Length: 230
Ligand code: CA
Image (cartoon, rainbow, N blue to C red; front, side, top):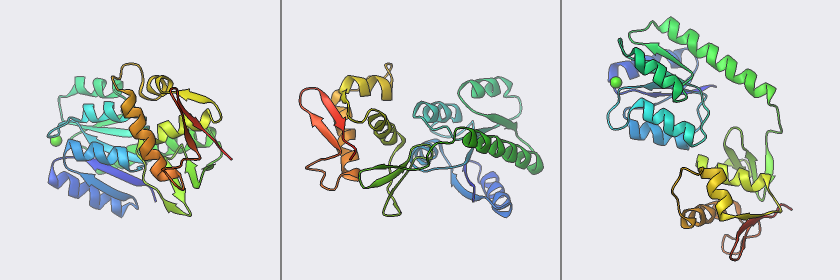
């Protein structure tokens, strides 16, 4: 079942959309302000996101930007109000896939949703690569941000997946903290080596049999880390 997140602060709109989308066979999750919306986007997997622009706390634009920056590539449809023409253009620049102007007809929205989901699934087919790879005890699907341990899903943030993917692609090589900082976070990010180390600790908790005695992500003293895949 395709899962859709609605981030919207108007209760009537949220309820109306939720009912109708569920009726159409979608699984629906909702957030009524920016922070919780972004939180959900970064922590769960959705097939599509309906994102209002004018939200309390954090605007839809900022959510869109932040999600793309964190590597979330879920399709996003912006919900704009009448007369926000400039906003639409901005939204697409910030990585949204489409927009729809309120008030819109349900039929039009459903058509847009279907079109975007169809496009997204074609892209997936074209980039076919093995669904799951083995990392220690985990089976990991990097494209869908999914990690399973004995069939049970292990929660990981997009950043954790990003780091794990980087180490996986460079397994057997010594990775400097600087490499991780520039390649996973990007040079514009002002983060410390300590942040990197904390993420590695968190990852070890999830993938190592004994996190205090790591066998998969090992420390190379004074330099960085190395992933050992057996
Ligand atoms: Ca609003």
